[in-house]
Image 1 (cartoon, rainbow, N blue to C red):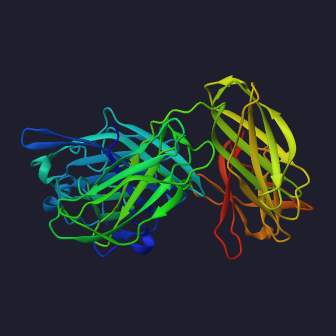
Image 2 (image 1 turned 120 degrees about the vertical axis):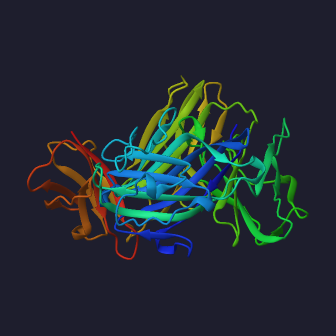
Image 3 (image 1 turned 30 degrees about the vertical axis):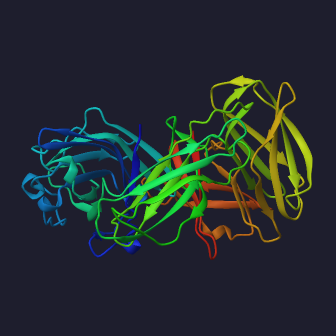
Length: 476
C-alpha cells in the first residue's frame, strides 16, 4: 500500500540557493514517492519511485541520477562526467537511455566500476509534447546507513549527456537538491457513510519537530485517470480546499475528522490528494486519501474533453469499465442551466477494457458552449458526466490536426485566429524541420522540404501572449 508522495518542485527559473544547475537543457520537477522503509540491522532499506521531467528536444540522450546522505555529498565539477572517485559514498546510481524509447541501462558509461541499480526496476515515459517527457522509475531499493528512526534528508544530482562513452561531455545538470523522506507524515481516509453518504474525510498531519513551523495544505479531488492501473497526482486533479498558513509541531498536530467535501456525479469513488508545503520544507509532500467506497454505475468515465475546430466542436470521452450500459446522450447549453440533446452514441454495453468515443457538434453557438454526457443503462437508469466549456468566440484560437497518422508525408491541420508563421515542426531529437505551407481558408497543408522519415513529430504553435500549443503527429 502506498504511504505518501514526496515532490521536489525545482523549476530551473526558481532554483533555491541550495541548488545549482546548468541549463542548456531542462531537467525539472524531480519527485520522490516513498513505497516503504524497513530496518536491516543498522541500515535502513528504502524503496522509492523517482520521477522527473526532461526536454529531449535539447539533447538528453543519456541521463544519470545519483543519491547521497548529506554528510557524504561530494563537490563535483560537472565540466566532466563524474567517476567513481568523484561520486564517493553514493547510495544509488541510475543510468537511463533517453534516446528514443526510454530504457534503463545496466552500465554507467563514465566509469565501469560504478554499477547502477537495474534489476527489478521498471521505467515509464509520458510524452508531454514539445519535446518534454516525464520519466518515472519504480521500485528503486537501496540501503541507507543508520537507523530508520533517524533517516536523513537525502541529496541528489541529475545530469545528462549526448554521448555514451568513458569521457562524455556533460550537456546539463541539476545538483544539490534535497529529498525529504519521513517527516512530516500525512495519513487519513475517506468515510463512505453508506448507503446515502455524503462522503467525508479524516486527515492527520504529524511531525517529530518540537519547534512549531509554518505549513499549509491543499486538497485535490483525483481526476479518475489511471496510470498503469493506479491513481496518480497530476495536473488534471481539481483543487477543492486550501487551509492557509498553520503551525505544525510534535505537540500541535493537524487533525480533521469527518469533514465533508465537494464532488459531482461519477466522482464518488475518487481519491483525495493532500499537498503539504511550507517555507522550511525542502519539498512539497503529497499524500493520497484512498477511496474504498463501492458504488454501482453503468459506466466508469475516465475522461471527457472537447476542442474547438473551424466551425465545429469535437467531443471525446473514454470509459475504463462498462456494465450494462446502453448509450450516451450528448447535451449542450448556452448558460450551464438549460440543456438540449444534440445526439446519441451507442455504448459498448459490457466491457472491462478502455473504450474511446467521439461526437462532433457541427453547429456550436457563438460564445461559450457547455457540454455534458447523459450516460444511460440498459434498464433506463442514468447518470450525468461533469460539464465542460468550449469557447466559440470570435477570437478563439483553434489548432487541431486533420488526420493522424499523417497521409502521404503531408501534415494537415486547422489554424484559426493565429498567425501561421508561428507554427514549427520538430523531430523527437529537437531538430527543426524546414517546410512549406499551403492554405485554404483555415485549413493548412505542411510539406517538409527534404522529406521526412517515419516516426513521431511535434507540431508546435507559439501563440501571441500565451504559452505554446503542441500536437504529436505520427508519420507512417
